Length: 179
Image (cartoon, rainbow, N blue to C red; front, side):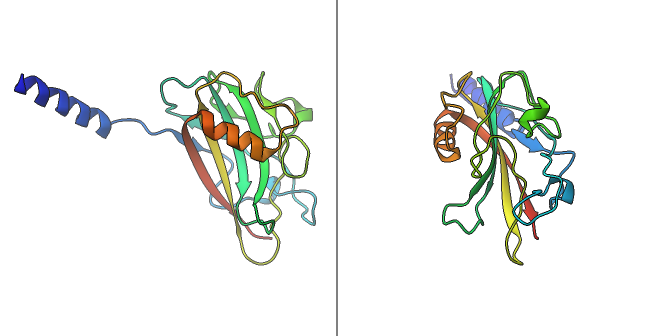
């Protein structure tokens, strides 16, 4: 019995050493936003195009994904939600460049782009104020539900609350932007 327990322990240790990590990446983003992905409003003259994002090694039991982009450094007292996409099917592992523009219909079938903090659906590029760079936290959530029960006009804060309740795992990138 003792040999079996040692064997089970060694298998568990070996498995955890080689477990794959849920990871978010982008072909478009390095450490900073380029002008193509910066806002085209609020005093910025960028392309306001959402970047390509892809993820891999989602945990077992994932039934759908969601993606958010949040600026904790915005001078609002509560940060600023730039993008919220929910109900991305579990069979999808990428958002193509431009998917944040609902008019282009590039986002995955069945997904929903709820309101950002401008009150509109879709992607709102960064446009930080002042001379201090802002951090933009882009997160993909692996969820335990096929569909999040958020209405299309839900605020980003409400959707974020629902995301965190249904999250199995999260993977994030932090991208900087300075005006």
